[in-house]
Length: 356
Image (cartoon, rainbow, N blue to C red; front, side, top):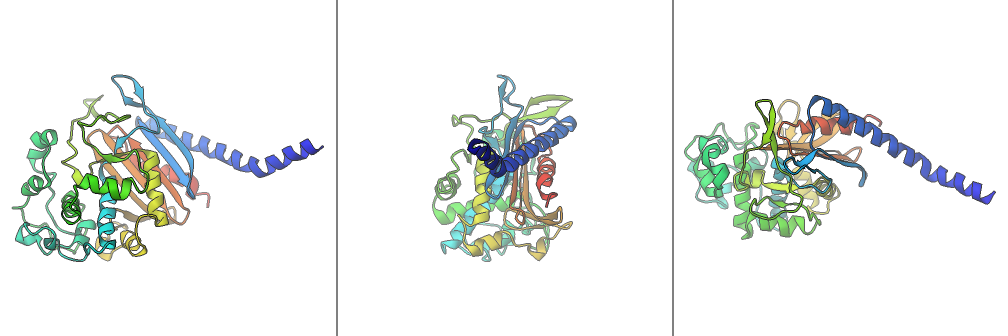
Protein backbone atom coordinates (compact mmCIF):
# COMPACT_ATOMS: atom_id res chain seq x y z
CA UNK A 1 0.00 0.00 0.00
CA UNK A 2 2.82 2.43 0.87
CA UNK A 3 4.57 1.60 -2.41
CA UNK A 4 1.40 2.37 -4.40
CA UNK A 5 0.95 5.65 -2.48
CA UNK A 6 4.55 6.61 -3.16
CA UNK A 7 4.10 5.98 -6.88
CA UNK A 8 0.91 8.05 -6.92
CA UNK A 9 2.66 10.92 -5.13
CA UNK A 10 5.61 10.72 -7.54
CA UNK A 11 3.29 10.96 -10.53
CA UNK A 12 1.36 13.77 -8.88
CA UNK A 13 4.46 15.86 -8.35
CA UNK A 14 6.54 14.97 -11.41
CA UNK A 15 4.12 13.56 -13.96
CA UNK A 16 2.39 16.68 -15.31
CA UNK A 17 5.67 18.57 -15.74
CA UNK A 18 7.24 15.59 -17.48
CA UNK A 19 4.24 15.11 -19.76
CA UNK A 20 4.12 18.81 -20.55
CA UNK A 21 7.86 18.77 -21.33
CA UNK A 22 7.44 15.85 -23.71
CA UNK A 23 4.49 17.54 -25.38
CA UNK A 24 6.44 20.76 -25.87
CA UNK A 25 9.42 18.84 -27.26
CA UNK A 26 7.17 17.17 -29.82
CA UNK A 27 5.64 20.50 -30.86
CA UNK A 28 9.07 22.16 -31.12
CA UNK A 29 10.39 19.32 -33.25
CA UNK A 30 7.29 19.47 -35.46
CA UNK A 31 7.79 23.22 -35.94
CA UNK A 32 11.41 22.71 -36.96
CA UNK A 33 10.48 19.85 -39.31
CA UNK A 34 7.87 22.06 -40.95
CA UNK A 35 10.48 24.80 -41.32
CA UNK A 36 12.87 22.29 -42.90
CA UNK A 37 10.29 21.42 -45.54
CA UNK A 38 10.43 24.99 -46.80
CA UNK A 39 14.16 25.55 -46.41
CA UNK A 40 16.93 23.16 -45.43
CA UNK A 41 18.04 23.81 -41.87
CA UNK A 42 21.52 23.10 -40.60
CA UNK A 43 22.32 24.46 -37.17
CA UNK A 44 21.26 24.40 -33.54
CA UNK A 45 18.25 25.61 -31.56
CA UNK A 46 17.70 26.37 -27.88
CA UNK A 47 14.46 27.38 -26.15
CA UNK A 48 14.40 28.43 -22.52
CA UNK A 49 11.96 29.88 -20.03
CA UNK A 50 12.40 31.16 -16.48
CA UNK A 51 16.11 30.33 -16.56
CA UNK A 52 15.55 26.70 -17.56
CA UNK A 53 16.36 25.10 -20.91
CA UNK A 54 13.24 23.43 -22.31
CA UNK A 55 14.58 22.35 -25.69
CA UNK A 56 18.08 22.12 -27.18
CA UNK A 57 18.89 20.23 -30.37
CA UNK A 58 21.21 20.35 -33.40
CA UNK A 59 20.51 19.56 -37.03
CA UNK A 60 22.47 19.04 -40.24
CA UNK A 61 26.22 19.03 -40.69
CA UNK A 62 28.95 21.26 -39.29
CA UNK A 63 31.22 20.10 -42.10
CA UNK A 64 29.77 18.55 -45.24
CA UNK A 65 33.08 17.40 -46.68
CA UNK A 66 33.86 15.26 -43.63
CA UNK A 67 30.18 14.52 -42.90
CA UNK A 68 30.53 15.86 -39.34
CA UNK A 69 27.20 16.64 -37.76
CA UNK A 70 26.30 19.76 -35.83
CA UNK A 71 25.90 19.40 -32.08
CA UNK A 72 24.62 21.79 -29.44
CA UNK A 73 28.31 22.55 -28.73
CA UNK A 74 29.07 23.59 -32.33
CA UNK A 75 30.47 27.12 -32.61
CA UNK A 76 28.84 29.28 -35.26
CA UNK A 77 29.63 32.77 -36.47
CA UNK A 78 26.90 34.96 -34.97
CA UNK A 79 27.33 37.98 -37.27
CA UNK A 80 25.34 41.00 -36.07
CA UNK A 81 24.43 39.43 -32.73
CA UNK A 82 27.93 40.72 -31.95
CA UNK A 83 26.38 44.18 -31.69
CA UNK A 84 24.79 43.26 -28.35
CA UNK A 85 28.23 42.51 -26.91
CA UNK A 86 29.69 45.72 -28.33
CA UNK A 87 26.85 47.76 -26.84
CA UNK A 88 27.36 46.06 -23.48
CA UNK A 89 31.10 46.82 -23.64
CA UNK A 90 30.33 50.52 -24.10
CA UNK A 91 27.89 50.46 -21.19
CA UNK A 92 30.42 48.69 -18.96
CA UNK A 93 32.86 51.52 -19.65
CA UNK A 94 30.15 54.05 -18.86
CA UNK A 95 29.31 52.26 -15.61
CA UNK A 96 32.98 52.62 -14.69
CA UNK A 97 32.95 56.35 -15.44
CA UNK A 98 35.31 56.05 -18.42
CA UNK A 99 32.92 57.50 -21.02
CA UNK A 100 29.45 58.94 -21.48
CA UNK A 101 27.22 57.80 -24.31
CA UNK A 102 25.73 61.25 -24.85
CA UNK A 103 29.13 62.79 -25.57
CA UNK A 104 30.44 63.33 -29.13
CA UNK A 105 32.66 60.60 -30.50
CA UNK A 106 35.37 63.17 -31.30
CA UNK A 107 36.23 63.18 -27.59
CA UNK A 108 37.42 59.58 -27.95
CA UNK A 109 38.34 59.42 -31.65
CA UNK A 110 39.79 62.84 -32.53
CA UNK A 111 41.06 61.98 -36.03
CA UNK A 112 37.66 61.76 -37.71
CA UNK A 113 36.22 63.80 -40.58
CA UNK A 114 34.89 67.13 -39.31
CA UNK A 115 31.34 66.22 -40.32
CA UNK A 116 31.46 63.15 -38.06
CA UNK A 117 32.81 64.79 -34.94
CA UNK A 118 29.54 65.88 -33.32
CA UNK A 119 27.95 62.44 -33.70
CA UNK A 120 27.39 60.96 -30.25
CA UNK A 121 28.11 57.46 -28.98
CA UNK A 122 24.36 57.13 -28.40
CA UNK A 123 23.74 57.77 -32.10
CA UNK A 124 26.24 55.07 -33.05
CA UNK A 125 24.52 52.63 -30.71
CA UNK A 126 21.05 53.36 -32.09
CA UNK A 127 21.91 53.53 -35.82
CA UNK A 128 20.90 57.19 -35.98
CA UNK A 129 24.32 58.62 -36.90
CA UNK A 130 23.80 59.12 -40.64
CA UNK A 131 27.20 57.57 -41.39
CA UNK A 132 27.90 55.96 -44.77
CA UNK A 133 28.11 52.15 -44.79
CA UNK A 134 31.70 50.88 -44.84
CA UNK A 135 30.71 47.42 -46.11
CA UNK A 136 29.52 48.83 -49.45
CA UNK A 137 32.78 49.78 -51.28
CA UNK A 138 33.93 47.15 -53.83
CA UNK A 139 37.32 46.79 -52.12
CA UNK A 140 35.59 44.79 -49.38
CA UNK A 141 34.47 42.00 -51.68
CA UNK A 142 37.49 42.10 -53.98
CA UNK A 143 40.34 41.89 -51.48
CA UNK A 144 39.73 42.92 -47.87
CA UNK A 145 37.40 40.04 -46.97
CA UNK A 146 40.36 37.77 -47.67
CA UNK A 147 43.27 39.83 -46.40
CA UNK A 148 41.64 41.56 -43.44
CA UNK A 149 42.04 45.22 -42.47
CA UNK A 150 42.42 47.48 -39.47
CA UNK A 151 39.40 49.47 -38.27
CA UNK A 152 41.11 52.67 -39.42
CA UNK A 153 41.63 51.24 -42.90
CA UNK A 154 37.91 50.46 -43.04
CA UNK A 155 37.02 53.97 -41.91
CA UNK A 156 39.26 55.34 -44.64
CA UNK A 157 37.08 53.63 -47.25
CA UNK A 158 34.16 55.95 -46.51
CA UNK A 159 35.51 58.97 -44.63
CA UNK A 160 35.27 61.20 -47.73
CA UNK A 161 31.59 60.40 -48.24
CA UNK A 162 28.94 62.83 -46.92
CA UNK A 163 26.58 61.91 -44.12
CA UNK A 164 23.34 60.36 -45.32
CA UNK A 165 21.21 62.51 -42.99
CA UNK A 166 21.50 64.80 -40.00
CA UNK A 167 22.57 62.72 -36.97
CA UNK A 168 19.82 61.88 -34.51
CA UNK A 169 16.93 62.40 -36.91
CA UNK A 170 16.09 58.85 -38.04
CA UNK A 171 17.06 55.20 -37.96
CA UNK A 172 19.11 53.65 -40.77
CA UNK A 173 20.91 50.42 -39.86
CA UNK A 174 24.65 50.99 -40.27
CA UNK A 175 27.62 48.76 -39.47
CA UNK A 176 29.99 51.74 -39.55
CA UNK A 177 28.61 52.93 -36.22
CA UNK A 178 29.53 49.65 -34.53
CA UNK A 179 32.95 49.66 -36.19
CA UNK A 180 33.56 53.02 -34.48
CA UNK A 181 32.17 51.70 -31.20
CA UNK A 182 34.76 48.92 -31.27
CA UNK A 183 37.45 51.54 -31.85
CA UNK A 184 36.16 53.52 -28.86
CA UNK A 185 36.27 50.42 -26.66
CA UNK A 186 39.91 49.93 -27.62
CA UNK A 187 40.87 53.59 -27.18
CA UNK A 188 39.20 54.03 -23.78
CA UNK A 189 40.13 50.65 -22.28
CA UNK A 190 43.64 50.36 -23.68
CA UNK A 191 42.85 46.77 -24.72
CA UNK A 192 42.10 45.32 -28.10
CA UNK A 193 38.40 44.61 -28.66
CA UNK A 194 38.69 40.82 -28.39
CA UNK A 195 40.65 40.98 -25.13
CA UNK A 196 38.26 43.49 -23.56
CA UNK A 197 35.27 41.26 -24.28
CA UNK A 198 37.07 38.17 -23.02
CA UNK A 199 38.11 39.76 -19.73
CA UNK A 200 34.97 41.76 -19.00
CA UNK A 201 32.14 39.65 -20.47
CA UNK A 202 33.11 36.14 -21.56
CA UNK A 203 35.11 35.10 -18.48
CA UNK A 204 32.84 36.71 -15.84
CA UNK A 205 29.74 35.12 -17.40
CA UNK A 206 31.53 31.81 -18.13
CA UNK A 207 30.83 32.06 -21.85
CA UNK A 208 33.57 29.54 -22.50
CA UNK A 209 32.57 28.77 -26.09
CA UNK A 210 32.33 32.38 -27.28
CA UNK A 211 35.05 34.51 -28.78
CA UNK A 212 36.42 36.62 -31.60
CA UNK A 213 36.59 34.47 -34.72
CA UNK A 214 40.26 34.47 -35.69
CA UNK A 215 40.52 32.07 -38.61
CA UNK A 216 44.14 31.12 -37.91
CA UNK A 217 43.23 29.78 -34.46
CA UNK A 218 42.60 26.06 -34.02
CA UNK A 219 39.03 26.26 -32.75
CA UNK A 220 37.39 22.99 -31.64
CA UNK A 221 33.91 22.32 -33.05
CA UNK A 222 33.93 25.31 -35.40
CA UNK A 223 31.22 25.04 -38.06
CA UNK A 224 32.00 25.55 -41.73
CA UNK A 225 29.72 28.01 -43.52
CA UNK A 226 27.68 27.27 -46.65
CA UNK A 227 25.56 29.14 -49.17
CA UNK A 228 23.43 28.30 -52.20
CA UNK A 229 24.82 29.15 -55.62
CA UNK A 230 23.30 28.07 -58.93
CA UNK A 231 20.91 25.74 -57.15
CA UNK A 232 23.53 23.84 -55.15
CA UNK A 233 25.20 24.10 -51.77
CA UNK A 234 28.75 25.47 -51.86
CA UNK A 235 31.40 26.48 -49.35
CA UNK A 236 30.64 30.11 -48.52
CA UNK A 237 33.05 32.90 -49.35
CA UNK A 238 35.63 33.74 -46.70
CA UNK A 239 35.41 36.87 -44.55
CA UNK A 240 38.23 37.73 -42.18
CA UNK A 241 36.82 38.63 -38.75
CA UNK A 242 38.60 42.01 -38.85
CA UNK A 243 36.12 43.15 -41.51
CA UNK A 244 32.91 42.76 -39.47
CA UNK A 245 34.97 43.52 -36.32
CA UNK A 246 32.76 44.91 -33.53
CA UNK A 247 29.72 44.84 -35.82
CA UNK A 248 29.82 41.09 -36.43
CA UNK A 249 33.10 39.30 -35.68
CA UNK A 250 32.14 36.85 -32.90
CA UNK A 251 31.34 33.13 -32.74
CA UNK A 252 29.28 31.36 -30.09
CA UNK A 253 27.00 28.42 -29.27
CA UNK A 254 23.29 28.31 -28.50
CA UNK A 255 24.06 27.52 -24.86
CA UNK A 256 26.44 30.43 -24.39
CA UNK A 257 24.01 32.85 -26.05
CA UNK A 258 21.26 31.67 -23.71
CA UNK A 259 23.54 32.35 -20.71
CA UNK A 260 24.34 35.73 -22.22
CA UNK A 261 20.66 36.59 -22.61
CA UNK A 262 19.90 35.49 -19.06
CA UNK A 263 22.73 37.67 -17.74
CA UNK A 264 21.31 40.71 -19.52
CA UNK A 265 17.82 39.98 -18.22
CA UNK A 266 18.81 39.39 -14.62
CA UNK A 267 21.28 42.27 -14.24
CA UNK A 268 24.40 40.13 -13.74
CA UNK A 269 26.50 42.32 -16.01
CA UNK A 270 25.17 45.88 -16.27
CA UNK A 271 23.87 48.46 -13.82
CA UNK A 272 20.16 49.19 -13.59
CA UNK A 273 20.72 52.44 -15.50
CA UNK A 274 22.65 50.73 -18.27
CA UNK A 275 20.07 47.98 -18.68
CA UNK A 276 17.37 50.63 -18.93
CA UNK A 277 19.39 52.47 -21.57
CA UNK A 278 19.94 49.29 -23.57
CA UNK A 279 16.24 48.41 -23.72
CA UNK A 280 14.71 51.88 -24.12
CA UNK A 281 12.60 52.48 -27.28
CA UNK A 282 14.09 55.84 -28.26
CA UNK A 283 11.64 58.02 -30.26
CA UNK A 284 14.14 58.80 -33.03
CA UNK A 285 14.64 55.08 -33.72
CA UNK A 286 11.03 54.26 -34.59
CA UNK A 287 10.68 52.41 -37.89
CA UNK A 288 7.77 50.26 -39.06
CA UNK A 289 6.43 49.79 -35.55
CA UNK A 290 9.72 48.85 -33.93
CA UNK A 291 12.59 50.68 -32.26
CA UNK A 292 16.31 50.08 -31.88
CA UNK A 293 17.84 50.26 -28.40
CA UNK A 294 21.52 49.52 -27.83
CA UNK A 295 22.21 46.38 -29.87
CA UNK A 296 18.57 45.34 -29.42
CA UNK A 297 15.51 45.57 -31.67
CA UNK A 298 12.48 46.43 -29.54
CA UNK A 299 9.11 45.46 -30.95
CA UNK A 300 5.87 43.68 -30.10
CA UNK A 301 4.75 40.20 -31.11
CA UNK A 302 2.08 37.85 -29.81
CA UNK A 303 0.65 40.82 -27.89
CA UNK A 304 3.71 41.40 -25.72
CA UNK A 305 7.14 43.06 -25.86
CA UNK A 306 9.82 41.33 -27.92
CA UNK A 307 13.56 42.01 -27.73
CA UNK A 308 15.46 40.45 -30.62
CA UNK A 309 18.26 40.68 -33.15
CA UNK A 310 19.23 38.75 -36.25
CA UNK A 311 22.56 38.26 -37.93
CA UNK A 312 23.86 37.20 -41.31
CA UNK A 313 27.33 36.81 -42.78
CA UNK A 314 28.77 34.65 -45.55
CA UNK A 315 27.74 31.09 -44.68
CA UNK A 316 25.91 31.82 -41.42
CA UNK A 317 22.59 33.11 -40.04
CA UNK A 318 21.58 33.75 -36.45
CA UNK A 319 18.76 35.04 -34.27
CA UNK A 320 18.04 35.58 -30.60
CA UNK A 321 14.83 36.85 -29.06
CA UNK A 322 13.34 37.33 -25.63
CA UNK A 323 9.81 37.95 -24.40
CA UNK A 324 10.41 39.59 -21.01
CA UNK A 325 6.81 39.32 -19.84
CA UNK A 326 6.87 35.53 -20.25
CA UNK A 327 10.61 35.20 -19.56
CA UNK A 328 11.09 33.21 -22.78
CA UNK A 329 14.28 33.14 -24.83
CA UNK A 330 14.93 31.44 -28.18
CA UNK A 331 18.32 31.11 -29.90
CA UNK A 332 18.78 29.88 -33.49
CA UNK A 333 22.20 29.49 -35.10
CA UNK A 334 22.78 28.15 -38.61
CA UNK A 335 25.73 27.48 -40.88
CA UNK A 336 23.64 28.00 -44.02
CA UNK A 337 23.46 31.61 -45.13
CA UNK A 338 19.95 31.50 -46.59
CA UNK A 339 18.32 30.30 -43.36
CA UNK A 340 15.61 32.68 -42.18
CA UNK A 341 16.67 32.27 -38.58
CA UNK A 342 14.40 35.02 -37.23
CA UNK A 343 11.31 33.32 -38.71
CA UNK A 344 12.17 30.03 -37.01
CA UNK A 345 12.92 31.69 -33.68
CA UNK A 346 9.59 33.55 -33.73
CA UNK A 347 7.67 30.38 -34.60
CA UNK A 348 9.29 28.50 -31.72
CA UNK A 349 8.65 31.34 -29.28
CA UNK A 350 5.01 31.32 -30.31
CA UNK A 351 4.65 27.76 -29.00
CA UNK A 352 5.11 29.13 -25.48
CA UNK A 353 3.85 32.72 -25.75
CA UNK A 354 0.53 31.72 -27.30
CA UNK A 355 -0.22 29.48 -24.34
CA UNK A 356 -0.39 32.41 -21.93
